[in-house]
Image 1 (tube, rainbow, N blue to C red):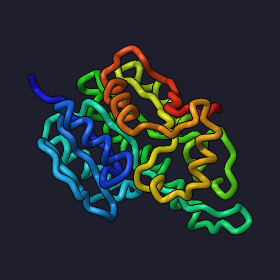
Image 2: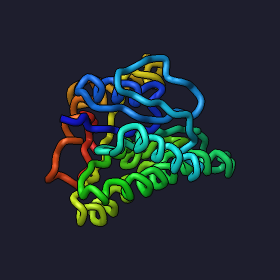
Image 3: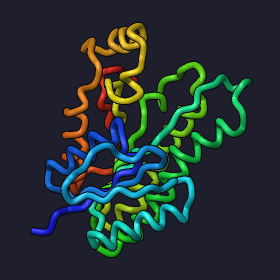
Image 4: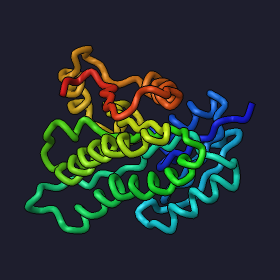
Length: 233
């Protein structure tokens, strides 16, 4: 049986790295992109491409490269994301634009190109990595919160349009986990996250990645927002 192929944006570290490993262990072909930091790991049946998803031409080349390598894309995970915190009064237009362009516009670009491929096969799964910040207000994160709230609205519209072709679209809130940015958080912040959790804990990254692999295989679940976190929204 031919292996399925997943395309993951932002897979050099953090969630993206853990997702790439999880899909590889599930015997998927893993393709993906990174902007600045080349992945420090190697996987079987994988292809990593340097690309800036805020540039449409880069995205077109990324998708073309994936198809050339494996012939098809079964799942797209829009994972690439950045934050650039500042209060609104002090936020520059560059700080606003760079976050919106990466977290929201970049997801639009990759989705648009991958949909062209999935439509031909009348199947596929698109999973957008959103954030609890789309529902909860945090000081200095207006640009990030707006981008993730927009990504959720985008997911719901996408599910309507893609569902006609047998393609699912869902969003997942990954919660707070001790990888990459999370590992650099202060103990005081981590304690605060735990206090907000009904389980007094942080997200287990393996549980999260296992869930994403599981979700990618579902054929009758779409248009949903999964809060993979025990903080209430």
